[in-house]
Amino acid sequence: MKDLLTIADLGADGIHEIMHAADSFAEVCQRPIPKVPALRGKTIASMFFEDSTRTRTSFETAAKRLSADVMNFSASSSSVNKGESLRDTVETIEAMGVDAIIVRHRSSGAPQQISRWANASVINAGDGWHAHPTQSLLDVYTIREEGRSFEGLRIAIVGDISHSRVARSNIEAFTLLGAEVTLVAPPTLLPPYVETLGAKVSHDIDTVLANTDVLYLLRMQNERMDQALVPSLGEYHRAFGLTPDRARKLADSALIMHPGPMNRGIEISPEVVDDPRVRVLNQVTNGVIVRMAVLYLVLSTAGADRSDA
Ligand code: CP
Image (cartoon, rainbow, N blue to C red):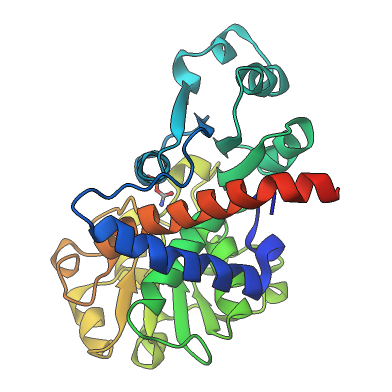
């Protein structure tokens, strides 16, 4: 694969291939010196046009553990502020000699567009409302490392589905692997085409909890809303937030996940964050492992894919 743009591009076989590679890199990350020469001589540009803590730092850590050189591009202090276009910016960075570009952008489709301009591999680190494939891959890895089979696994994704690239990629990944996905949200936070997504829909979290194996909470994405879609954040918390009472309705074996950053007191009560079923920091740890696998597979096969083209 030259690029990683969406989960659909990967398919179930591609997801499994990345999971197997990630198992090897998990062992590398346990070593006293967690570093291998797999990508020595490769240069990876990290181009984030939108804020990030987890994705940016875990990609950079992953690249360094594979011995690649990392070029950091900061949009907020770049010539983008002087009006330089996305195409000119990407072509300028690529002209310095990069093998892969990791890109996060507020516009859906920006990584696809960059992949048409660039010879370097392009990895989507989140584009608008559209896709966040490496978040889904680390989520799949996190569920899988608990020994859970996806066939028939009951996963409830709760919250702001409408604005969530994580939800879109996770619905694709989880259903491709055989899970039964239920989307739980008020009608105002569901997209109009929700019935085409291959998931069930519920507007009542309390009826879903007892039959859920994985509860996946989403952040309320106020920065992507141009109008109030819930009466208030307090009202949302009362109707859909994971409170201690609701956490008691979940099975002891259930997993509670969240892509971060969490809004404590909105989608999850502060007391529930420390529940032993919460896997939020496992997700972060696995982000490094899975992104090592993605970088390795993309950069070790990209040349072959280009010569086939
Ligand atoms: N989950 C996620 O994408 O987090 P960041 O925005 O911090 O990268």
